Image (cartoon, rainbow, N blue to C red; front, side, top):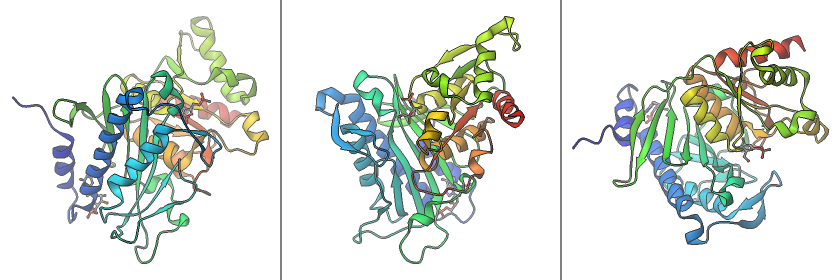
Length: 337
Ligand code: AMP
Ligand code: P6P
């Protein structure tokens, strides 16, 4: 019985469209797939293996690390550091870049990742995910430094996420569209179930943490108020609202049925000197690559996220992404001020 195209087969076939490819990139993608399977297994067994709760530490963002944050970070490193395809890594859970141990060969790719995004949902059994991005090192002589990571999102060679939800899925782009795969637990392999994912340009669904409403800038407040006004208001239609507090789940919903996700900069963040809530290198850029490749758009309110020049490993930025028509409307409101 044919079980459909596996992610291993899909990645191998994609390599054929890359003349001269050595297979390093293919191998690295497969290592990332293995890491996501391992993390999925840990997440699925949660309480049964004592993996829930706090790790008793904080990350550089001052956020309490969950045991699964730390475990997922270790698994991602364990599955990729040995391969000889990676020059260095950067993660939400590590203050500095992770240099490949001397016993392993170094490669030409840089990995950035959020090993378990939305982990505040873990203890309440709500979907979480892993976000990853691959950059190419400009200069492979010598050791990688933080500066090697400070590349615009347009320089990503791949990005994607794993979603640990009712089913475990992986969504991947290497710049040639977006494809979704579902983990078949019986054979331990991801199967192509969502080929060529495309975001509907129109939507009637928005996602924002409304508890921050009193801090929003005028363009965001105008957009949300108009959605809430419904068919009697200027939009002439009713809207639905969602907020899962797990970016991976929000983005996946948008890829599947459209919508707009907003985590804008607000007065509270500005007061703290923060550029936003979400991190550019391992949340905003990879998700923007996926969203744009699926026909959507992703902006800060001032510019296209993927054109930003990163200034730091853990730089935070505003994020407005999703159905192109809605993101363009929000960009228009920001341009009007
Ligand atoms: P490599 O020689 O294996 O490092 O591949 C060189 C480049 O070809 C990569 O950086 C990608 O841009 C592209 N490439 C190689 N293999 C694949 C693949 N399996 N899927 C998509 N792009 C690939
Ligand atoms: P809030 C999770 O911590 C995260 O980085 C994103 O996954 C999510 O969209 C956002 O923060 C949730 O933030 O303020 O609603 O808890």
